[in-house]
Length: 234
Image (cartoon, rainbow, N blue to C red; front, side, top):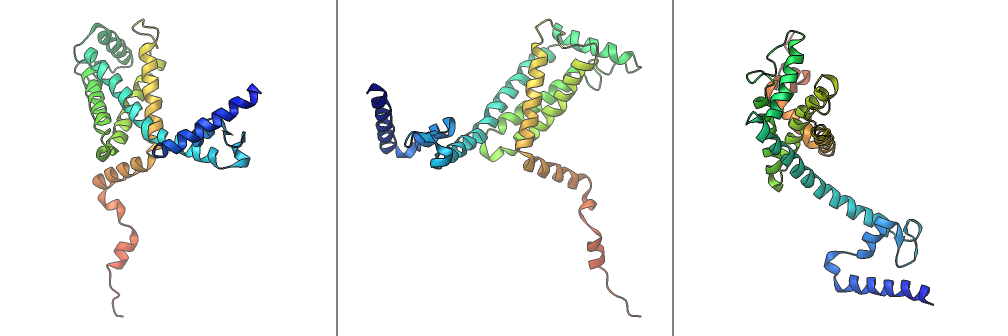
């Protein structure tokens, strides 16, 4: 008897919740999307009703809305936290860029990672500052496209960081912190790649705008030249 009473009470409570709060959506649909079981029928929703599909649609919509926001905040925090080391020439920064510059000097590119080099701590830090600023500005709905541009910069910066950690004498634990710096670089790199894939239409639009600004003549095909000519009488 108690085994039959508990499901009945659960059904009654859920029905009362849905009828009392229709504005917040159906709780049973959300539960079905998470578990695949319908409270109304006590059977798998895939063959009984559409609650499972509707619940999945709700979760997918919420994931698409909130995941980029959460990632943007995390990536901006990682970048901004690293600036206090790069812009103050901290000991940790001196060790990292010193090892990289010594490695570059081994094949005749000494000074590449020095404080006045092409890939100095200030150049990398400035790129991270721009990326974090764009991530935060992209939190506003009207400026959401900036998140895609920020992710593009983050992929470029973190691709270099991950490669330097893996394929140079720098190693994955240069600061003896258990590889925390490398782990954060990988996390931001993967998250930025995922964001670019998720916002690929915006990415293609940005890249197309850049191409049009650099090579405006590439958009005109042969038909435009043919249309502008007139047939000459023989």
